[in-house]
Length: 189
Image (cartoon, rainbow, N blue to C red; front, top):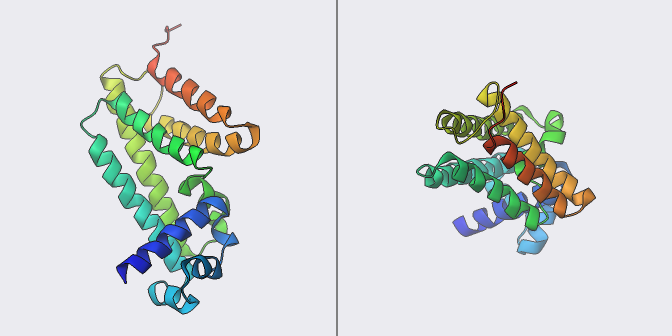
């Protein structure tokens, strides 16, 4: 039974990343998994419940990855984050945060809360990585690390979207310049 639940979450994750949360139905899950809609409702009575489960899975995955990266130098940790986005780019996907954000205002409150919690977790980790790296002279940037983390994440999200429209090389151009800007010391004027 746990396998069915995980398969439902996995397919919902893929559908959200390719079609968007509001653009898929339980039928889009039941048909390919060859199960009845009732089976999905057994695990997830509402689509909101399913969305929350998908986000919880993403947050746990992120925490697992960042825990594995914690002993690396901060530039390597940030490269791992970039590589996570690169994998999504190669698969033709948008990240979960990026695909849920445009429809955020249409979601019920529990789903909005989960989207906000996921976004905050990603931003807080990125800010800490940047601050630790700046203290070690690995990263160079002005301003608050949380503000810089927001810039990094928004650029990563945009790189996935823009590469769909402007071609696959766009992702590498954006992420390459972003990383270079963070790791190159600039002369103070």
